[in-house]
Length: 147
Ligand SMILES: [Zn+2]
Image (cartoon, rainbow, N blue to C red; front, side, top):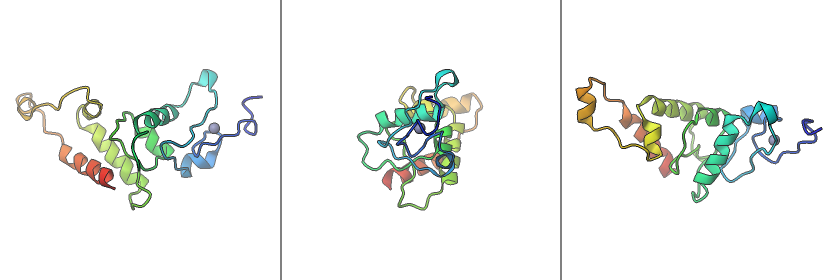
């Protein structure tokens, strides 16, 4: 039976068959990704995101690690996406709240992927929108990138 846990010997640090890895596992881009076949259930989104990160970050030397909770909020990724530097004191919670703040500012993900240009400040004023607190997010990005 392919759905027997002992049949599915997985070399990924994050495996849905391994409960502990879902809360404590740390995965660095380039490491193994669970190869289990999901059939009707479909592959969990966070596993697809691991695959995407492996492609995007393969040239990056120290991309940091990702946990399942982090991957779950990582809706968009780019070559600039970074996990947590293992030498830093950044917590998983801090990374996630930074990520959520990033998503809250309009169109930021599409911008990360280079699909759209940042809106000009003039336009936002005309439409009466408040300027998103984008400077804070950029601060976070830089910290992570320099680590
Ligand atoms: Zn697995």
